[in-house]
Amino acid sequence: MKCKVCREPAAIEIRRHHAVFCKDHFFEHMSRQVERTIHDFTMLEPGEKILLGVSGGKDSLALWDLLTDLGYEVDGVYIELGIGGEEGYSSGSLQLAEQYAKNRDLNLQVVDLATDYGYTIPEAAAETRRVACSVCGLSKRYVLNRVAHDGGYDVLVMGHNLDDEAAVLMGNTLNWNLEYIGRQRPVLPATKEGLVRKVKPLLRIAERETAAYCVLKGIDYEVDECPLVGGNTGIRMKEWLNVIESERPGTKQRFLFGFLDRVSDQFASAHQEEVELNECSNCGQPTTNELCSFCLLQGRMADRG
Image (tube, rainbow, N blue to C red):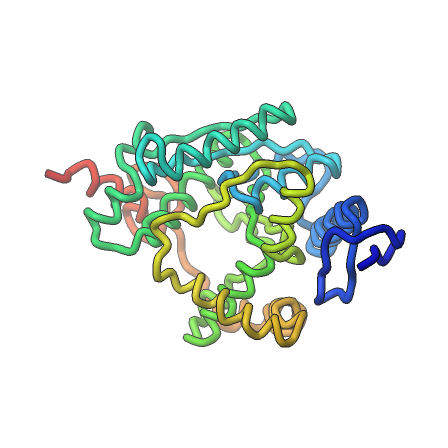
């Protein structure tokens, strides 16, 4: 196959775009897709202080690279979750994130759940008897927002890609989780003091493409899936969508952007109730209760026998 732009040997085919690209024109394509998404949804403004949640995986490292090359000054934050022990999944992912930051002379802050908050994700899952992804999601949402807020950042950038967002939308639609559907937006505004605006610039980029970008750019990333995600609903949704996508390329993008372009505003206004938020009596972060869910979890872990 030949690159559609220069007719040199192709490095990747993107079937939903009916296109094949050589390495350099693939990089240009990725950059244009991210830049277009930022522009279309007014995600980032000049002079804003930007923080990126970094996992050591392909999506966050590719996004950090793309944003940096586009001229944005972006700091990173990595959360050490304690998965796999001292030489396991989390520590390996951290090493990859640190190596990338060092290679590009970027700032990476590390938050260690065990050191800073007194527990790891496996410990919390076992103590609460909740699915590991549930306590992990709760912990990451809180810590990322807290670091961004306390650090004076204007915006928190997340590496959710096209596959991620389409799978979440599919899961919520199949179960008619109207509240969650109403909150699925490319930009989540800071609706209360203590919250930081969140944006998702990889909406037009598929998982396979961030992996190819890292390989072709020589960026080492964590290849393995988290060992605690077995049975995760999102993974099953991705598998089902992949079957449809293989038969009808572009299905994921049409599904997600059809929702965003045509009906997301209606869902947001009709089904996203206005919730009165208070300050958590322990940490001061916004919550619907006296204590936020994170502080309740942290307290339970502190009280374990």
